[in-house]
Length: 227
Image (cartoon, rainbow, N blue to C red; front, side):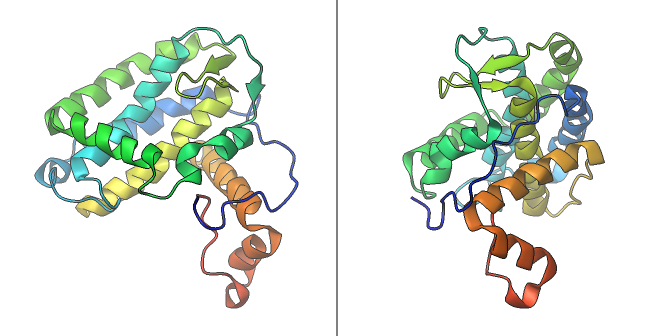
């Protein structure tokens, strides 16, 4: 287990149900497409990315798979279980509980490297294809979704925020990997992502660490990473 991963506060469950416009995923994905299509990405495809153990190609496919997962999950079966809060979703996540060499994280890297063999043009085409499907998918979205890889259900807004987090974080990773500007997402994308990251960091590190990092750096700990 990663050192320091623990619930250090008793906080109410976090949910975004009723507070997120699902359509914000569309402009976020549009920025993702523009990043994936950059020639710098294709030129560095086989080089190691800023994510240790992942090539630029693998990271690119991992990024593209985030909106693709939304389309797949929203088209899936209606859950027959009660949804859990998004905070509980992360508390249960195997990849957070394991270090980088744990099976969940190795599995992500392995699958992404396998997909990267298709090349940058295929990744860009897949990103454009999912962007074209998002409007219709989000318009007819159910209120809850089933996550087939865990068997748990989430509210649809909560699930979409988890994908927005992946898009924002890994867009930064990919831009840093190839030396291009980081995509600047709209405030209605960044706000729920930052809210989720702050909630996870608070649960993991506690009040003192978070408050000091944001206001008193001279007393701040070395990290308040959410993961």
